[in-house]
Image (tube, rainbow, N blue to C red; front, side, top):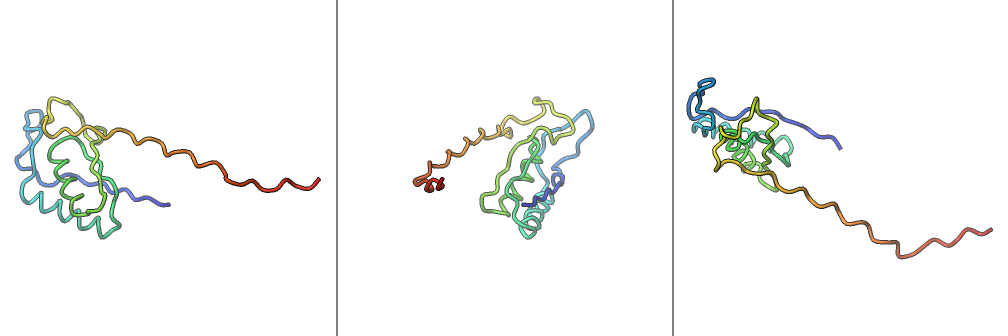
Length: 122
Protein backbone atom coordinates (compact mmCIF):
# COMPACT_ATOMS: atom_id res chain seq x y z
CA UNK A 1 0.00 0.00 0.00
CA UNK A 2 1.42 3.36 -0.97
CA UNK A 3 1.17 6.41 1.22
CA UNK A 4 1.24 10.09 0.36
CA UNK A 5 2.57 12.84 2.58
CA UNK A 6 1.56 16.45 1.99
CA UNK A 7 3.36 19.27 3.76
CA UNK A 8 1.70 22.63 4.18
CA UNK A 9 2.19 25.71 6.25
CA UNK A 10 -0.52 27.31 8.37
CA UNK A 11 -2.91 29.85 6.89
CA UNK A 12 -2.44 33.61 7.01
CA UNK A 13 -1.89 34.74 10.63
CA UNK A 14 -4.20 37.14 12.42
CA UNK A 15 -1.25 39.45 13.24
CA UNK A 16 2.35 39.96 12.25
CA UNK A 17 4.99 37.90 13.97
CA UNK A 18 7.97 39.98 15.06
CA UNK A 19 11.00 37.66 15.34
CA UNK A 20 12.06 37.11 18.96
CA UNK A 21 9.28 39.42 20.22
CA UNK A 22 5.97 37.76 19.29
CA UNK A 23 3.13 37.35 19.47
CA UNK A 24 4.05 33.70 19.05
CA UNK A 25 0.72 31.95 19.45
CA UNK A 26 -1.88 33.67 17.33
CA UNK A 27 -4.98 32.57 15.47
CA UNK A 28 -5.77 32.85 11.80
CA UNK A 29 -6.89 35.82 9.76
CA UNK A 30 -10.25 35.19 7.97
CA UNK A 31 -8.26 34.80 4.72
CA UNK A 32 -6.18 32.11 6.46
CA UNK A 33 -9.37 30.29 7.46
CA UNK A 34 -10.55 30.41 3.84
CA UNK A 35 -7.21 29.01 2.69
CA UNK A 36 -7.52 26.18 5.26
CA UNK A 37 -10.96 25.29 3.86
CA UNK A 38 -9.53 25.29 0.34
CA UNK A 39 -6.69 23.05 1.53
CA UNK A 40 -9.21 20.61 3.00
CA UNK A 41 -11.17 20.51 -0.26
CA UNK A 42 -8.00 19.91 -2.28
CA UNK A 43 -6.85 17.11 0.03
CA UNK A 44 -10.29 15.52 0.06
CA UNK A 45 -10.26 15.45 -3.76
CA UNK A 46 -6.74 14.02 -3.72
CA UNK A 47 -7.67 11.01 -1.62
CA UNK A 48 -9.04 11.83 1.83
CA UNK A 49 -6.12 11.88 4.29
CA UNK A 50 -6.57 10.03 7.57
CA UNK A 51 -4.36 12.12 9.87
CA UNK A 52 -3.16 15.70 10.06
CA UNK A 53 -0.04 16.32 12.11
CA UNK A 54 0.19 19.84 13.48
CA UNK A 55 2.51 21.87 15.65
CA UNK A 56 0.96 22.90 18.99
CA UNK A 57 0.69 26.53 17.93
CA UNK A 58 -2.85 27.86 17.57
CA UNK A 59 -2.44 29.00 13.96
CA UNK A 60 -1.29 25.52 12.93
CA UNK A 61 -3.90 23.65 14.95
CA UNK A 62 -6.65 25.87 13.58
CA UNK A 63 -5.48 25.31 10.00
CA UNK A 64 -5.38 21.53 10.54
CA UNK A 65 -8.76 21.44 12.31
CA UNK A 66 -10.51 23.45 9.59
CA UNK A 67 -8.97 21.35 6.80
CA UNK A 68 -9.78 18.09 8.62
CA UNK A 69 -13.36 19.26 9.10
CA UNK A 70 -13.71 19.76 5.35
CA UNK A 71 -12.17 16.36 4.62
CA UNK A 72 -14.65 14.77 7.06
CA UNK A 73 -14.90 11.10 7.88
CA UNK A 74 -12.62 9.82 10.60
CA UNK A 75 -9.85 12.32 9.89
CA UNK A 76 -7.77 13.06 13.00
CA UNK A 77 -5.61 16.00 14.03
CA UNK A 78 -2.56 15.03 16.09
CA UNK A 79 -0.14 17.41 17.78
CA UNK A 80 3.47 16.79 16.83
CA UNK A 81 5.99 19.04 18.56
CA UNK A 82 8.67 17.93 16.07
CA UNK A 83 7.13 19.89 13.19
CA UNK A 84 7.99 23.30 14.68
CA UNK A 85 11.13 25.29 13.96
CA UNK A 86 11.65 25.46 17.73
CA UNK A 87 9.44 24.82 20.66
CA UNK A 88 9.06 26.43 24.05
CA UNK A 89 5.92 25.41 25.97
CA UNK A 90 5.67 28.91 27.46
CA UNK A 91 4.90 30.28 23.97
CA UNK A 92 1.87 28.06 23.41
CA UNK A 93 -1.57 29.03 24.70
CA UNK A 94 -2.59 26.52 27.35
CA UNK A 95 -6.06 26.34 25.84
CA UNK A 96 -4.59 25.24 22.50
CA UNK A 97 -2.39 22.44 23.76
CA UNK A 98 -3.91 19.10 22.95
CA UNK A 99 -1.97 16.14 24.33
CA UNK A 100 -1.58 13.26 21.92
CA UNK A 101 -4.01 10.40 22.36
CA UNK A 102 -2.80 7.34 24.28
CA UNK A 103 -1.37 4.58 22.12
CA UNK A 104 -3.84 2.05 20.84
CA UNK A 105 -3.68 -1.38 22.45
CA UNK A 106 -2.36 -4.17 20.23
CA UNK A 107 -4.97 -6.21 18.42
CA UNK A 108 -6.07 -9.44 20.13
CA UNK A 109 -4.31 -12.63 19.04
CA UNK A 110 -6.06 -14.72 16.42
CA UNK A 111 -8.30 -17.49 17.73
CA UNK A 112 -6.80 -20.97 17.90
CA UNK A 113 -7.55 -23.26 14.96
CA UNK A 114 -10.76 -25.21 15.30
CA UNK A 115 -9.59 -28.16 13.22
CA UNK A 116 -6.29 -29.73 12.37
CA UNK A 117 -5.33 -31.37 9.08
CA UNK A 118 -5.06 -35.16 9.17
CA UNK A 119 -1.54 -36.48 9.82
CA UNK A 120 0.46 -37.53 6.75
CA UNK A 121 0.52 -41.26 5.96
CA UNK A 122 3.82 -42.86 6.92
